[in-house]
Length: 472
Image (cartoon, rainbow, N blue to C red; front, side, top):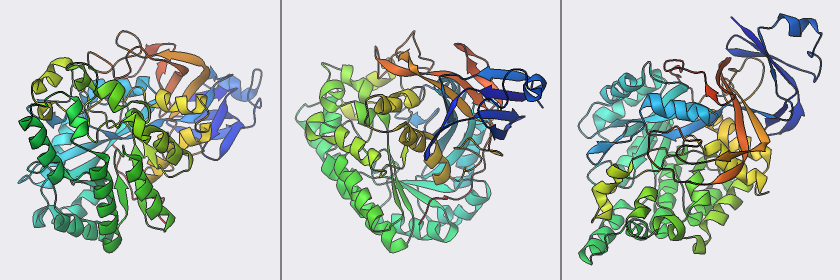
């Protein structure tokens, strides 16, 4: 096994920053050394296989994107990133672990669905990966499969209050699943929108000839997200089950999560970069069909209603547990399936490559600290999804997943620039942002350095996850 010494960097943790030299032995961090104790001329430096100078750089634990959808089927097509292309793009952006969603369709056996996703990912991933399980059909067979999922290292299950006829679960199904999850220590993840009411607004809009992409957002108002979030919280309270609400876009929904947390309930909220930076007016409401590029669910929210600022405030207050991407990219021709009917536009925004940079803009602008950046991009996702302390921290014994981040660098986002996702546009096309992913190390192997990709498909290992570690 090879050894590596990273010297001169500033290690960033959720609890502070400190200068340290990092010694890597094989795939693990062997030691954190006093700054300069392993510099030129020392016996240690002369014996390691590789030396990396991190002077002026942050050393952060590899990013964990706990919400991706590689190769996900949707409306007659599938997400354009495969596990090979999507995880390579993740690596370019400093993400060294993803947790993707295996999807059980109604009538399909849960474990068969999980194995189908294993076949997609096996031998293809450039970074480490795990799975959540989507239950598209809650019945006695599905509930009986939950214990077997835990044995497979899948300790989180996602339900939908949206998409009637596709993934939708009613309140009784949700309650029964939460009760069983509580018995097994499985985390319930929730897409919280009132899908029944949304479908009625969609029907009304289309009947009026309102077909442009902006109506995707207008027919999914924040009230339906807040109501569903509140309902999920109350169901979880009765079931005595922890709850993780995915892709929260409305400040009112995040406020309900914050209230539940302040009362001592195990409720956690996730948001995404696009809800922090983009809006219905500026992107989804772009002229003609161009807004289709930003169709996602939950939708982008009006900036005039204060959602973006509100989410940043909740993040700063520690009420946002994680920032994930909900990475589900589609190319232009795929989005065009919804020309003349916004309800048929494939839902998804691709950003697995840019999450670390986009959330760092919160540090650069003074919205959050560097410690909070690391917390929501790596450490808390590791704790939430049973990967800590193997992941999410730079410490002796942890996996050597380390990103050298240059706070003085800049990153240009867009096709032909820093864009390795398998899609022909960027949701952030033309943006130039402060900060730059310099070097990416996964389990002691350099994946990205000096603008060159050194990784390979198959480097990534499947992670059998444990239970959430940040419950009260």
